[in-house]
Image (cartoon, rainbow, N blue to C red; front, side):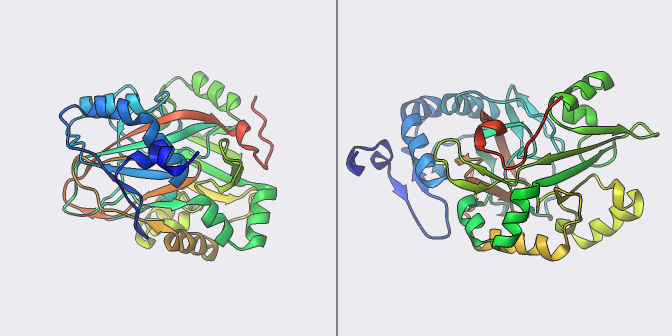
Length: 335
């Protein structure tokens, strides 16, 4: 197919180094209709570049945004195993994660620790912050290529281990994460999703799950660094936050932490290396109110940068993909 006849080429797109592709939509009073008309072209851009930011749709509220999300997605997902609370606006339409504005949310792939995760992430900026707060992106095959071979090989052999301690004080409670307060239902979910669980004497829940750190993109077959190893590791926390949490909960009681798949701790220097490789492959574009962003969740990691002022970004997880369809390097057996 020649480029002139591809759907992506019909759009007015701005490609700049260090920024995601930015597509300027003609101002429209009917964003859902525009989204429906340009769905195939937008998805072609995402397939080619891994993401796209659409400017000019004038998204201002949850209802209109949800309608746009629904036009662009094959199906919106209900979040399970959340690590921090969100507000639910409507089925499949959420607020961004509640996370301190002055703390970055480092690069990660959404729900990469689950057995079914979104293939597509949708973001819409209803209110842009006065400063900072970009949803930055990084190409995961490029990140994988830039990482030391021996480190990648170890993660391919062993996978990565996520440990979580659910309580009612920090992060998502188990009821928020699993959508129920019924312990039996939580246990059934864990067994079905290859999660080890242990109830603590105070009623808190501790879980462990081992997952692949490298997967193949189901559409292209490309190897992707796909995980939350750095983001959910204790050394990514601000030093004062880390010190406080260890003081209160103990080293084994942190709300979340990551390890090598064999259970060995991941050293601070490894986490710093991962985050520096992400940073050198990061593209960013400050949000403007009304912007829309589509991100291939397997090929492209995303982050949230620190910000000042009110920031409202709506999120949808869409087009579920099963880990089993992504050539995992670590066998996962669900109960």
